[in-house]
Image (tube, rainbow, N blue to C red):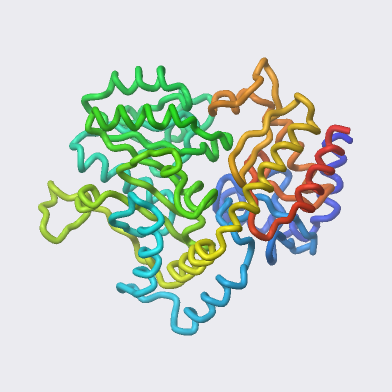
Length: 434
C-alpha cells in the first residue's frame, strides 16, 4: 500500500482533529508548543489517556509508545500517582515556599543516585542542563563545554549545537558564542580525545547521555564513557551525565553506577516528575555549593535559580509517588526491559536485514538501512539511514493500526504495556513490508 492510501485513511478517521488543528495553527506557531509534536498532514488532537492508550477527539484509540516524551513509565494516569495528586490538590498545588514534599522526593533521589549529594529543582530538562553547564563554568573558571554530535539537551543556547544532521550547520539564528560549544563523535573515543585535547586548557566540562535519546536511541559503550570520564578527571574538567531520559528508566536509580562511572553532575527529569513538570540538577556537594548565594560574592557564585514553579508540591508529590512505587515494585523493570528486548529481537527478525534496531531495556528504535550503513553506533550513522522510510512506517502504524510512535522517534514501554501489544505491533510491521 502506498503512502497516499495511508493519508486517505488517516484523514478519514481524524476529521475533528483536522478542524481543531486548523484553529490551533491560528493560535500557536505551527499549531504546536513543542516542535517535534508536529507531523504531516497534521497531528491528531488528544482528548484523554489511560494506561497504555491515547484517545483522540474522533474517539480513535492508539496504543502509545511515545508515552509522554518517554516519561510515563507507569503509563497514563496510574492510580498510585492520581490518588496522591488528588490528596495534594485538596491541600493546594502551589505554595511558592519550602515544602515537605520536596524533602521527601529528594530523600528518595539522594539514596538512589550516589552523585546526588545536593539537589536543586527546576521545571524542565532544558533548565537542568543549562544550569549544569553554568555550574561547570563557575567551578572550573573555564568557558568551553563539549557535547556529543546528535546529543539533545533541550533548547538552552549553551548546548544548542550539532543536534541535527549535518552537524556542522548552526541549529538556529540568534545564538552567540557558539565557539564555546564543541562537539565530539559518540562511541569514537580516539577521535573524541583528540578534539578534547585541542581545547583542554579552556574545557569546563563534557556533557553526555549514556543512551543517546533524540540522536537515535544508541547506548554508549562502557569504554567510551570511562575514557571520557578519565580525561575530564585528569584535565580538572567536569564530567556531566545527562540522565533526563535514562534516569529511573532501566533500573531504580541511574544507569551510570552499573558502568562504574563517577560523574560530577547528573541531570534528571521525565520519570522523576511522575508526569508533572520537573528538571533536576544533582551533584557532588563541593560542586553544588557554588550555587549557594548566602555567603558568596557575585564573582564567586554560580547563580542557579529555579523558577516560580520549581519544586511545586504537585510535581514533588507525583514524583515521590512514582519513585516510591518503583522502589517497592522493582519487578516493573524486569517486565518492561524484557518487553523491550522482545520488541528489538522480533523487529530485527521480520525486517530481515533491512533495519537495525537500537536501544536498551525498555527503549527501542528502528533504523531503515541504506547507503552502506550496516550498524548504528552514533548519530551520524542514524542520520544516514532512511528517515523517510521510518516516517512512513510510523505513519502507517498510526493511520492503519492504532499504534502511536511520534513519527521518526524512538519508542518506550510502560508498566501498562503487555506482550500482546508488542505482538500486535510486530504484526502491523509485517504488513508494512508485506
